[in-house]
Image 1 (cartoon, rainbow, N blue to C red):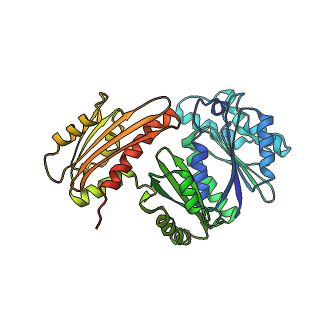
Image 2: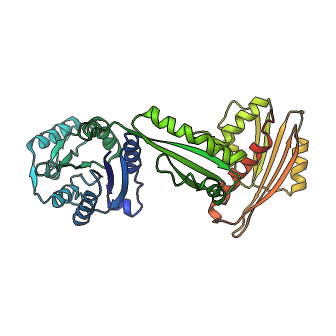
Image 3: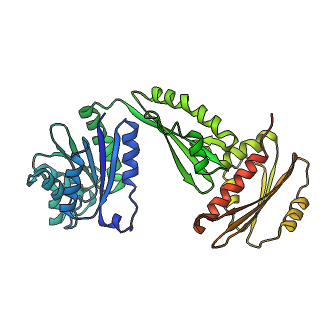
Length: 384
């Protein structure tokens, strides 16, 4: 299978003025067709630097995709950069100029002389008409490699990728395989502990296993490269149960399954309505639980922080039926140590926990929300 690199072009990306969503889109698409992505790069609007990055990429892979820098202004340098990397001049393509003029005619205005620059592409390049914008794309081929330059406007880039570039790549590089990923979710356990449990699996070559830590949650990614989607699914299915077994009750779901969705299924399965009293988290736990509208629930949020005995009194006062689940949360932010108090009344009993967090203060609320949801999940699990 070929390998690829993506080069996102634009000084505005380097300065953080806009977010590079094109790389994410292209990376996932390449993954779905079995193309190994070696590296992604962001380069400012400088033709010499872009050309240098392209030349470096050509030493490593067969497919180089650039996005951005194909506009009509002086600071749109991609055409010149690709020409520099290929050691060829820019050449005027009359058919591209005709397409650009036709596009502007549809817009009801004439093109400027600057737009004529967009009809100049590296000599010998394959022009790619852009029916949804004014910036033509192009492909420069070597004997075994392709440099593909796409517009930076996401809508245009996505259209051209799906309708022009993907068919081209399938034909030229005989793309037949796929790379699929499955993400397992765990909570209530640290990254280092998970790493200890599955360290032997993290050195596998195919499928591969990797960890990604979030505040209060750990994701375990299984990635399989195979000749077909079904084969990749089988490879993942052969490994996932072993990881789930090692995670024990810290495991709560995979892919799109969230803590709140797991809780919703648990409560519905046991016919337990939920009442929640949240203090200090700006209603974030309420927001996440409310996403599951089929729950019969009551939610309350406040910034006025009670003490723990007062919270227990609130829970007891609001427990009106024997099958009520009444959950209370108090979050106390602090620059050094942040504290989370959790109190829970269920038909199975009373549960209480106090937890502390000493990581980056800005991550404290996210940690608290995930920790609170995981506490609820664990204590409403059915023993059936």
